[in-house]
Length: 517
Image 1 (cartoon, rainbow, N blue to C red):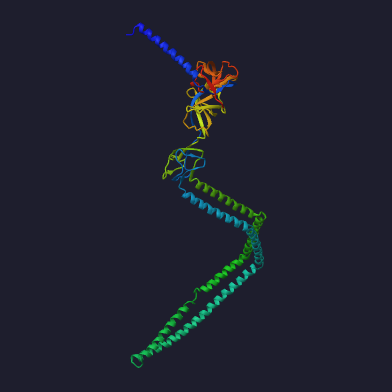
Image 2: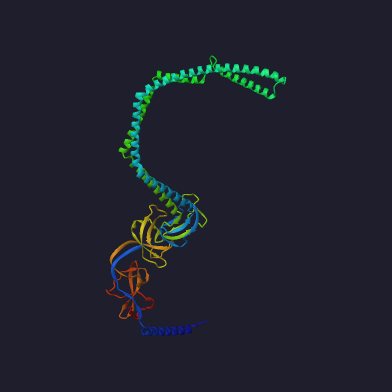
């Protein structure tokens, strides 16, 4: 156990050691080389007060890219993490049907252009030719009407005379034929009787073998021929019995009856009416043709043909767009965030309830700062206000523009968005951020760089100033901090040189030298 005397001796030795160490330290400082420092002088300026909020970054745009036409994915032209520009190819889907549609549309356009060429070359001539044809048809119809008026009755009455003559001639022909038939029957009867007697006589001689077989056969053949002729003559005479119907007479009689009725009904008047109707029709056709010429209707035909060419061009344009749509392109500048389909998968249109996107692309050139602000602070900001954004990684004072203030309140806070340009900042979606919002400003305040003030606590801090060639510590009162500067409310003499770096090498009285720019 240590007694009081021993403890007193230890304390004495400790005091001696500390004194020696302090003396040696002061001597070492006086002997050491001066510390090189940078300095700044207080400046008068406008102090902007701000309030900080925490939030995070989101992509300003996140697009799920679907196929424009349904089909199999045949190639992938981008991969996750790849930076792409708007219009860059991401993938290719099968384009067979679209290619066939282009061929059909090109063929339809060729036909329409050919029809337009033909119409422009011949439409006017064809319509004018129709007028000439209509004029000739009218003249022919008028000539036919004149002829009909002059000759129709005479022709029909002549037809009656001819029909009567033909009927009488038919009767006379039948009478002559009847006489000839009766005479032919008589001759056939005489010949039959003669050959019959000769046959019977030779038959007896043949039976007695007084004549040869050949002679008998000759006589027999003659008898049979005369029998046939007689039968034919009888049949012919039967046709001319009293009351027998003779087709030629009946036809002539019927023709005569028809002609008589035509005459009785004045049939030539119907012919004249028909000829007049044809003149009327021809006149109407001529009037129509004249109106077409006067109206230059070929211009309408040409306009229709041109419209058909325009429509065919539109169809071809649409078909080519659909073929181009087989190439799945990025709708925005950004980075490929996710690949959802692989080669061989069947891509569907976005409207399909079971469709999947091919890729998800996010925009990173412009990001969206997202945070919640208490409802009491919401009145301090408006759309279009500028805010300063910083990250934990040391990226500071990035300017954002307030673009959205939610009209609704949730958990006593309001959701706010600000757009942030990210072309050179290297920010990434998901990064935690601090958002500084201006709450007010004071003019003509004393400002120092924030890094020049150390040990900030309870409204005060420490600075190093240069007096002669040594650093001296000085306690100062401070106000707010904004944008890398701090307000010093303690008055400093004009031109005071305040050290802004290497303070960790300094103590009160350390020799310093000012760095030369």
